[in-house]
Length: 217
Ligand SMILES: N[C@@H](CCC(=O)N[C@@H](CS)C(=O)NCC(=O)O)C(=O)O
View 1 (cartoon, rainbow, N blue to C red):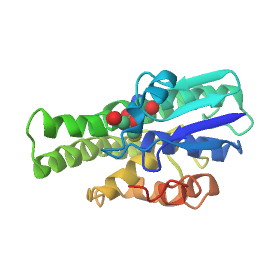
View 2 (cartoon, protein in one colour):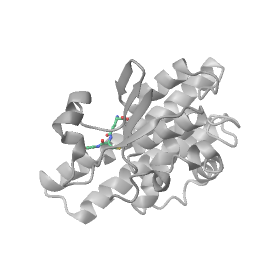
View 3 (tube, rainbow, N blue to C red):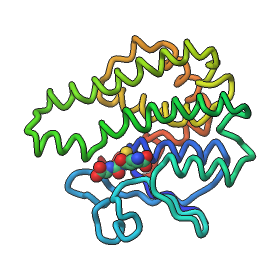
């Protein structure tokens, strides 16, 4: 019995949907509506499960986890048949570097509660919040794009010609960037990788538009 608590446009949940799909693991999907006003992530029942009040949350048998990077690493260890980390130590470290660039240095700055705090507590208007959002995505993507070139390890995907956890984390971040109208012309390698990823069922089926709670905005 496997259950993923998520929200259609949560990019952290999107990552886990991709990994589950690529590994061919079925799951029940339980939508947690993050829309301001609904705020189901802060409902007492959900907080009892995940005191952090965020999605995703994964229950896999007797394993129960918050934090998508922990879920991705767990799925990799528990279900290694379709590996999402490459074989060599150098390549694995490179994939984790890219993964963390997005998961640690881009995504947290653009999370819903951060944007709400900028508006509510600091009085930032819509234009200022958008500027913040665009800046941190472009700043991170500049480094990601540079690493794709300088590492000599990228191929059709971020690491060679097989999708890895770097791609699993990259694709949802690009989806977010598109949603907020962030120009991505300066990142041709990222764009090509995302296009290659989205041709695979594991990525395509995990897209926000394909989720049962879409378009419950
Ligand atoms: N580092 C966490 C981040 C989780 C996270 O921030 N999730 C967002 C959606 S992408 C969320 O639940 N936000 C609700 C809120 O901020 O109230 C992870 O990767 O799982």
